[in-house]
Amino acid sequence: MNYFSTNNPNHKVALKEAVIKGLAPDQGLYMPETIPVLPAEFFTRLSSLSFREMGYEIVGALFSEDLTPGQIHELVDHTLIFDAPLVQVEDGLFSLELFHGPTLAFKDFGARFCSKLMSMLQDKRELKVLVATSGDTGSAVANGFYGVDGVEVIILYPSGKVSDLQEKQFTTLGGNVRALEVAGVFDDCQQMVKKAFLDPDLNSRMLLTSANSINIARWIPQCLYYFYAWSRLPLSDKKAVFAVPSGNFGNLAAGILAERMGLPIAGFVAATNINKVVPDYLNGAPFAAKPSLQTISNSMDVGNPSNFYRLLALFDNDESLLKEMVKGYFYTNEQTREAMRAVKRDTGYIMDPHGAIAYLGLKDFMQTEPGEYQGVFLETAHPGKFRNVVEETLDLELPLPERLQAFLMREKKAEKMANDYQAFKNYLLRS
Ligand SMILES: *Cc1c(COP(=O)(O)O)cnc(C)c1O
Image 1 (tube, helix red, strand yellow):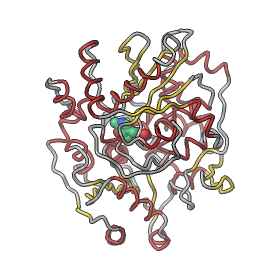
Image 2 (image 1 turned 45 degrees about the vertical axis):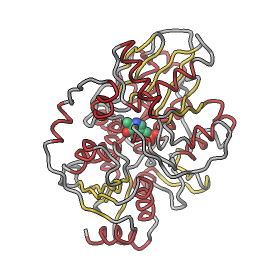
Image 3 (image 1 turned 180 degrees about the horizontal axis):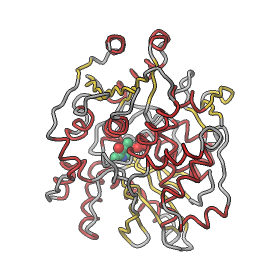
Image 4 (image 1 turned 135 degrees about the vertical axis):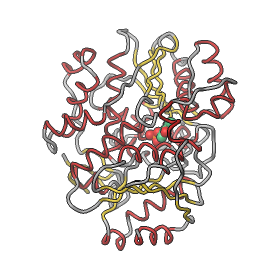
């Protein structure tokens, strides 16, 4: 299978180049040239398959031209080492808990798949993986790649803009994982990484790659849990809708990929905080990137969502089809907290601020046609990852999951970096 650039459908590369390059030379995002549609028969069997069993078939449909059946099994087995339980929260409304992986966030799926695929495709030269993170990407990628031979990970994060716990998860590993604390915001970090990939001088001297959600190796595996969740919904004549708390929109785009592969999803909710350029677009405004604003759902504080053109590409750039399938909603911090309180009070379920935004979007969407839908909102992080916000909002004490507790004891090792591309380049050349 070849992969084309969203900026130029005639620019096509093989899997290996798409994964190692991450971003196309014209700054476009890679997309699979054809989206395989799974046979109707597959969907009738889905509820009797385990997560891994369906994974082999889905990954097989996408990658069988490039990988052996053995490699496909290895990839899926390496990735799906944890469950994604579908938990009923209200009548006809479910939470898909994607936070049972090593760093307790959904990005573990993509990071694990990506590290394994890169190590399968990489040849002799050492790979440097550059990652800009607004929080959870850094920890998921750092942990997904930690200890993988022949790959070094360099994480750029905005100083003071990620939680202590997030920071500890990618600054304390050491080994092949290094962290740069940038005096800027997330978008500055992302700009520096993008610039490095396009710098011919740098690229002639080292093999650089990305593991952000723009990389197909991070992005594509995220489609798997949509199949799984759909297969575990109770039998019903209601239409399935998925609400996705979104920042860079990789997760939502992966859900649409599943739908394009034949999964019968009737609609999606793109739910954001006040960084709402995509909801604004879906509601009729022109698409316009904006500086990001800080919120309590900080993993979604993104003003220039990098997967936007992938959303369009999934509909062959037909804006009206995109707008038909995806509805945009956004919420303030106060609305987010109010939802967290109401759900805890009425059902006992504890949501993290990101999941709460998806919950709100789902409720608002389902009210547009009462009784028509059963809905799933994606819980993208364990509430313990955003413990301060959850505790002060719900006025309770949340025990920190053991996996996270261990990180807090460790010592932070990060190098400070000016918001300056030349300084970053010099650092890469020195290292
Ligand atoms: C990264 C992240 C998101 C946003 O996901 P995108 O794929 O960038 O839209 C939402 N919630 C949490 C907890 C995250 O870490």
